[in-house]
View 1 (spheres, rainbow over the protein chains, first blue to last red):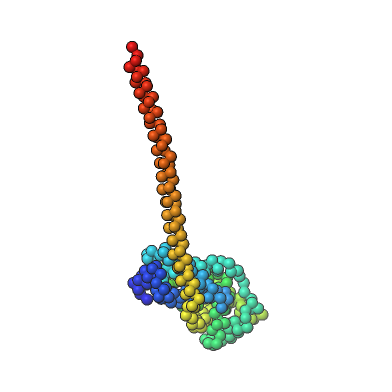
View 2: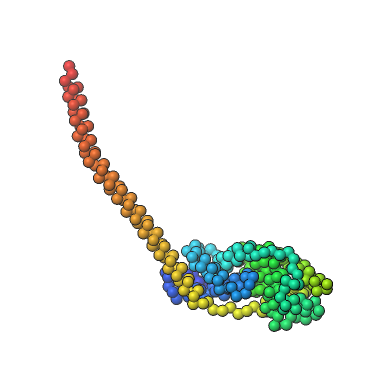
Amino acid sequence: MTDSEVSACLERVRQRDEAAIHALIAHMHPLVYKIARSNLARRGEEADLVQTIMAKVFSNLDQFAGRVPFKHWVSRIAVNTCLDLVRYEKRRPEVRLADLGEEEARIVENLAASDEGLDASLGLAARDLVQHLVACLQPIDRVLVRLLYLEGFTAEEAGASTNLSPEAVATRVSRAKAKMRDRHAQLLKDIDR
Amino acid sequence: MNPSEHRLNRILDAALNATPPIPPPSFQLQQRMIAILREKQESIWNCLDGFLTLRIFAAATVVMAICVALPLMQVKNPYHETINLANSLAQLEKP
């Protein structure tokens, strides 16, 4: 949907046109789902978080003044909702090999042993491992890394969702990655022991 | 690129490549959003109702105040006029 199509759709939604409501939900759902999925500590609870975010969007629809693209407005609501959740997550400065699942530990061992790319079957475990590695970061950095590296957002998109400039996103992510490298090195030390 | 950076990038690449597909929005979600919009519309009507009731109550209070004040004014005026007339007569009677 283009911006003008979204504006027309919003106008119809304000008049409670059900077809327009369905169209708007279908338009927003992938974006909201991606943000919700990447910021959940456990898989399988996306539907509830998506519903919470969508409810906020629809309840505040009258407050959308059109100063920013609708997509950015929705993603900010989604990210702010997720940030509230992320702030409740425990920040773990250290991670041990014993904290990881069997497949995540296998990834760490594989990476230590060879320079080849990871097996595709380990993809979901790699996502879980990233979630372990980001646990040492500040909430906003956690959200940024998740959006960029788990959902493929660009720095501009992640910036629009978090109200940061693309340069600020790049700086924060670069520092976050340095911390994640340290954390990963810690895991490799556990293997050597 | 140093080895630790290379390792981390490989994990991140594998994680991104394994992004699961996005399911379509559920029927339940769509119904919930429609219900939210309806509730909102009803709450707007309730607000309007409340506002109208307030206005009707205010108008009724003003009418009642006028109804009470008018007879009082009618009683008060002849009294004042009588006093004034008496005073004028008293002035005239003075030598």
